[in-house]
Amino acid sequence: MLLIECPWCGPRDEIEFRWGGESHVTRPEPHVGDDVWGDYLFARRNPKGVALERWQHEHGCRQWFNIARNTQTQAILAVYRLGEQPPPEFRPVPGR
Amino acid sequence: MKRYSLLRLIKEGFSGQKGWEPAWRSPDPKPRYDVVIIGAGGHGLATAYYLAKNHGVRNVAVIERGWLGGGNTGRNTTVIRSNYYYPQSAAIYDFALKLYEGLSRELNYNVMFSQRGMYTLAHSRHDMESAARWVGAMQLNGIDAELVSVERIARAVPILDVSRAARYPVWGGIYQRRAGTARHDAVAWGYARAASALGVDIIQNCAVSEFVFGGGGRIIGVETSRGRILADKVGMAVAGNSTVLADKAGFRLPVTTYALQAYVSEGLKPVLDTVVLSLATGLYVSQSDKGGLVFGGALDLYPSYAQRGNMPVLRGVVSAIAEQFPSLRRVRLLRQWAGAVDVVPDSSPIIGAAPVGGLYLNCGWGTGGFKAIPAGGWMLAHHLATDKPHPIAAPFSLDRFRTGALIDEAAASGIAH
Image (cartoon, rainbow over all chains, first blue to last red; front, side, top):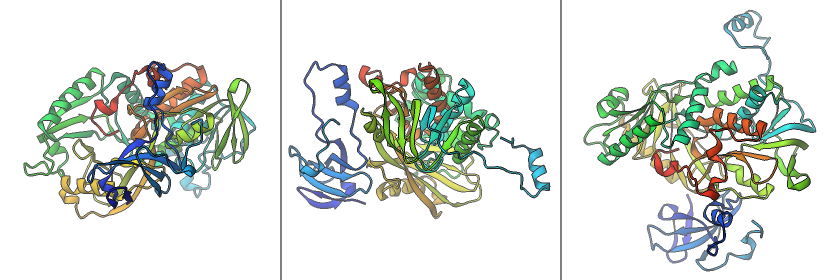
């Protein structure tokens, strides 16, 4: 069971939250072609290790925020607000 | 390979059981193969078997990081069915079901395939309307799906609470007579034994660290914990670890890895001789030949590579058992585990060539890979041997995420995969 630190409400049980997919996926400009658009819609990093994710405190304040979480150990390594960049040590390697 | 038979059993009985041999060879890797398959689960082993059997490609290695059949092949709830909505899905899953029907004889290995049928429960008027639509589609696909009444379900599954006061009242359901269960380990072991007998090398405890690239960026082999192994072609059937290997090869996949839990209870006298799936709770349950109730439910709520599940989902699944099968409330859980499953946005598999030359994919089966093992192996073997997709596998290419021709079973059939 995860204890998740909502930036607005403090530590709460994981059942109050909803996982909302990978963070920092940037919508491409229009007319980029099917390859780039398909990648934007479907391709995901799916890391075995630290993932940067959007979560929503669905059964609480209903705010969205970001989490850096290890997908093997489930350790939550950082919580940061939408619009913020992840802590530098968790930034993905360019090219992925 | 010495064949298993009644005569052999009797003969060994008279000679102190000393004549048996290991079911498969465990050779050291050769420096080069025609084909290397990564992942000795059901799909990888079946691929190697059909490469050797159907296409005469016998210089093949199956390499496995851990032990044979130790991933999702040994972690699923053993249900086999083909009641899918879209024609493309019905074609591939029914192809698998038909191969399962002859598999024990084909492999000379008892995979204990038991066509005990499967009931999918509808719990409301709306569920029944959907069920009628699905059954119509399935029948058009040539699948033996039937719409059944609550009375018939109550007769077949007496321990199910179908009363008006039930927390999840049952209105009727879908029945597939040819569905059933098989011994999951035996499927891996049977394919391994038969493939090994045809000359396939099965190499366990052999983890891939990197791909080896040749001219033009084509993959020509793998670096492993047991040295470099070169190959004309490399196939991969690694389920939840597919994106880990895709990273090493330099491309991305539309795959997200989740934990899917499964549970088995203490052994009971026979109480359930079919498979039951509930549309309301996502619970599916059958009883193994040993007597344990084997059951599962929905995916965990967030991605995970850990082969263990989290408590909220366990609580939900166990609550469903307690509500829908009241007489099982006091049955104790014996074991709980999870597999790392490869979920794709349209809940359909990805079979065929990778964006990188020399590499071929079999992944994306998500929560339903076990039932598809013979077909997944057959299709990947066809593509590896002929460099063309099998007609049944063609719609399941990776390219569909660029063209938009998805096969959206996730939205269509309303059934947990």
